[in-house]
Image 1 (cartoon, rainbow, N blue to C red):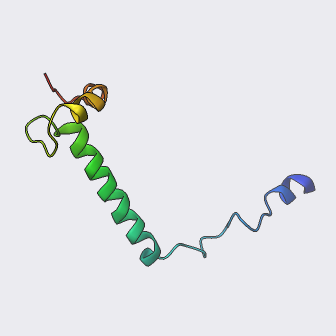
Image 2: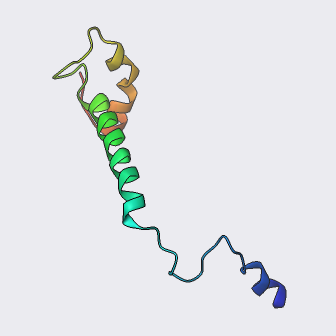
Image 3: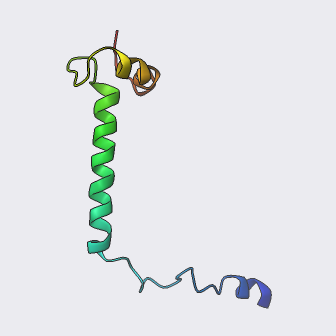
Length: 75
């Protein structure tokens, strides 16, 4: 029994909730992740469809299968 209890006594795994990450440290990463996700969603859902930033069909062909996988119609 002592060896099982000792395996959970690790300094890198906080057991109590006293070491919470402050919101000021999380907020910039959460905003960055939201921005990247929004850009990705735009390219998969809209680019080369109703609106296009780039000429040609390169972006459309690159994300074509992802559009169908996520349920976006494209043709």
